[in-house]
Length: 76
Image (cartoon, rainbow, N blue to C red):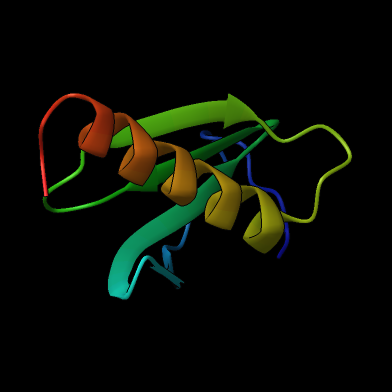
């Protein structure tokens, strides 16, 4: 995925999904310059610097973190 700067062109969202504990979770991620943003409908939003990570790998990791944070706080 190509990195975009805000002034050049808006980032394009890509779907990502994971299966954890027998449930499927989905989100959409985009890369804007050095930042990756992951948005989900029910779990929230997470933004992190991309660094040297592959964007899809980081998005899956952030999605798993959102799932675990939600479970810890009494969600699903």
